[in-house]
Image 1: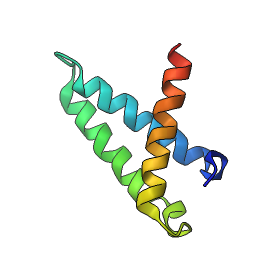
Image 2: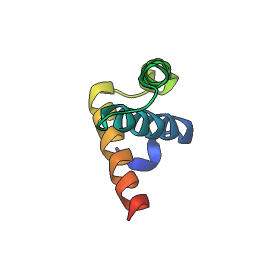
Image 3: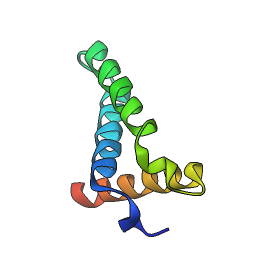
Image 4: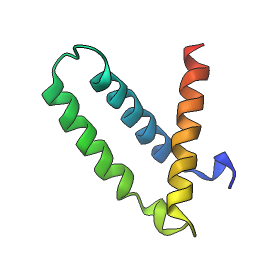
Length: 78
């Protein structure tokens, strides 16, 4: 599976999920209630995305999406 196979909106939601999760996992996060609610909303959008119905192995694709967005996040931060 190529990284370009993922829809842009799905990649953006995964990136937002990663960012929110990291903010919540940071020492002494601010406004944890808002972060948890955002994480839940993003989780629903991720898991309910129609893309997952089009791939033969959704669990492998989810793993690849997480790895892709983490790698892109590191590249953007550098």
